[in-house]
Image (cartoon, rainbow, N blue to C red; front, side):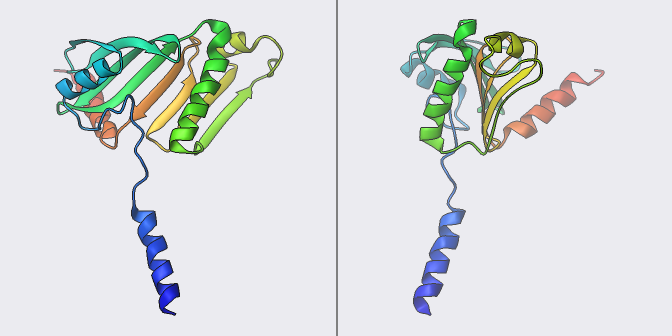
Amino acid sequence: MKRLFLLTFLICLSSLVKAEQPTFADIRWGASHDEVRKQLISKGFSPGALDKDGDFKFEGSLVGHKAQGLALFGDRKVAKVIVRIITPDHKAIETYRSMKEVLTKKYGKPSSDYEFFKKPYYDGDGFEAQAIKLGKATFSSFWGSALNLEIHESLTVQLNYESDVWEKEYEKRKARSNSVF
């Protein structure tokens, strides 16, 4: 009976331990502007100047392609990172699947995964890129609410990393933009 209780306790305790929070370039959530800049530079990226919201763009390369990103901050702490991998149109799906494999190895199987086409398009028809551009195909994977990988209609592969505080920051920004004053 003691063993059963101990085993049950350990299983419950392990479920309380938080899984690794997805981050881009090993940037710690809540890091300052300077910390994020240093980390991006150490990974080969070039950060730009702060904008009016206290965010900044960066660029570099990722998986052999040019990449552009945006580090978004709330209360001077990084809250979200968006990265677009600029691929040739015919390489978008291949790059997406390659990134998905890398992320799956790091964070486990996606919690949600979508790859589908709307008629008249289908996988293997030779018009996959056209379907994506027209919004007739979806390629998107989610690792909880913290990470999303997708092929954007511009045929870039986009990564969206969000911390737990991003939703609150997003609501503050939305309220500011809707303000009459």
